[in-house]
Image (cartoon, rainbow, N blue to C red; front, side, top):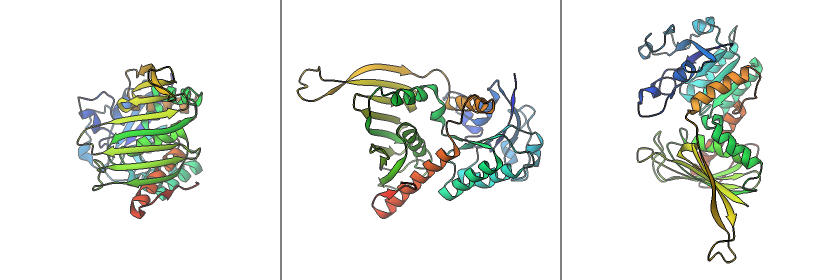
Length: 335
């Protein structure tokens, strides 16, 4: 079996440190995801801070101390490079990878792709010109249960979607970007955004953040988010003409309902009755990402979350910020 050579750039929370949380399922980081992928071989790690790296967790790996010097990373000729650094560094790092004499075949970028649509567009163009596959780690797209929901929605299990409601916690550019991408995945392109929030913006969450998204086919979605320090929640309801689906526990559990008029006191109204439920298999989003990246290189599938998808999510968040500043709705590019 061919093992794809992998390098991880950035050894902060997403790159490595997330695995220090023993109370959460592993792998939680890019390093451990690749180490646990039987189809991959972790051949190099890099961080500008040498104190983050020792040889013990990464057998055979090494560190290049000088920031942004990728010569020794590329000497290992990785097929895949995971970029797990802060979003404001992605454009410069990915540009260096694209310009390398022996560039990788595939780049995984942590989300969000960038903090501006300008930088995100530059990343997309650089990878396109270098003929490098760009995979953005909006991890829920890679999970089998999420993909099964997408398939059943497309096949019309609940009929035409009518509206959606989401409850989440965490910051706009941290966790809300996941929900925006998930809604785009299920419902299509966003045409405009109207957003408000009550309190200060921050990494932990926008107190009382409320976003209304209007999609190209007329569907509306409401996202209500709060401070992640209070509690952690990610729930999504999608209501259709013939039923509804409820994604719970970060999308790892689904409850399907069907429309019925055969209900006491229904009269002229319809009710939703429980239809079926599913629970996710014991895996993590990053495990599925690693397997999917290998499938791409082996020609088995097309990317499930492209650079264009990452760019579109950034554009929606920018529209949300413009909406808050103006006190009115903001149009998304291409609307």
